[in-house]
Image (cartoon, rainbow, N blue to C red; front, side):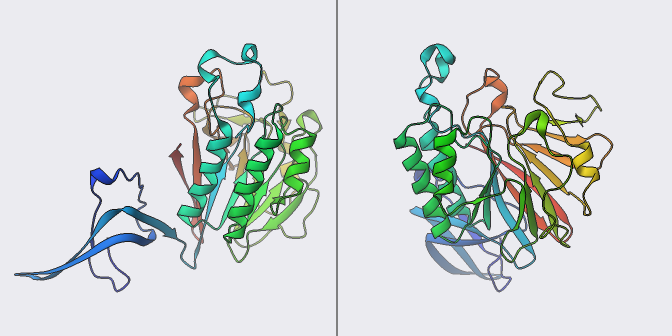
Length: 311
């Protein structure tokens, strides 16, 4: 690690402080809650930074990159589903607290935006769940980090009304550019078989940066690394081929939710990667595969990088 002058810097994190910090090679971080130590050696002066209990490392975006926290299927309110409607191991899952932690992670990382691929709420959400979600979103947007979302199939009328009352930006059937960044977002809400065949709005799309399509449904036709078609048994799978063919710009990444197992796939016949976010809490019958997480999307002038961050 090097300081802002390029001098080598040693960062020591003590196990007793129980700090869970991930580092990305080549990234820039702003450190706080640390003690500095400078000492001379036979070869010059060494500088160390040692952690304290208040240690934090905030990732700082450089001028030529945009960092976005991506998540989906948070299902706030899931714990209120009837006990018979979920497996025994999932009955104590508190998706509301995890939702707040996701947004706390965004603030700690200092990302440029948060993107949600739908099912912010579970269909059994309560007023307390909605109030907690509003607080997390408002606090994050208030810290200068915009929040973008599409609706999922579990986002009921109460949840959608709540989201509309927040300072978040609904991407459904429109485009939006992450402020002063390389990323342009286009969103389509939960549609199933009625997924649109043409792009609803081209006003902001087609930038020289990275264009990200955010949806919720299982896209079709999508293949894994072996070329095998996926999600064929989903009766509401979204046919995105005609939609993509109608665009006057390149789609560089499709972000989707709905499937509670995260994956990297691609659109058949198109060189477009597909990120299935997976859930932030273990709410699927595929418990062993769900691995709740968020994703850090880093866009630069040379391309995209995705880093999975377990919850």
